Length: 179
Image (cartoon, rainbow, N blue to C red; front, side, top):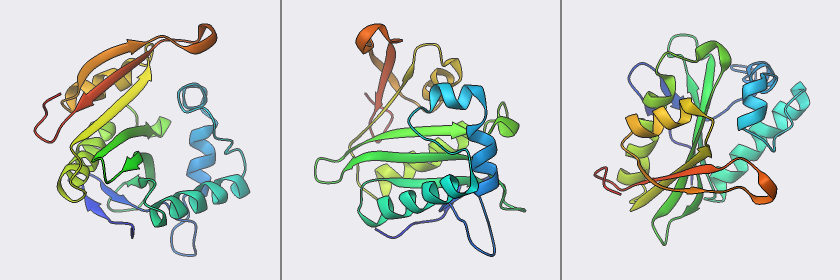
């Protein structure tokens, strides 16, 4: 699948970039240095420009392999990276995916997450024909819970973490907002 740009109203969604015209790597390093980002978006080491470049390259490969649709949430006049929204664990045959989202610390509290995730959901249900999209986050992540509710997800269950980890809230929604 080729990356698709989406007009999300106040923001636009585009592929992550690291080229001569637009370089998201410094903003990625800055975002992943944030303690909340490290807590709620584990598993990614993005501490240097080189690691950020690999992160951008991995996202491009995932688009090509139909594994994940990942968009940089960008400020429309400057192109500045404000976050990332994605549809991961894509199973186009089954019509399911899981949504994910993070917002750069300097852009939090401005509705970026709700706007971006709403646009990604429209793409998933409309362009990809998905029948169900799930969303999950740690129970203490109140911002993610608010985004899930504002985007029409229904709380499905609370899953207790392995080895005493924090419980995760599992949400779901269909094309018309139904669970």
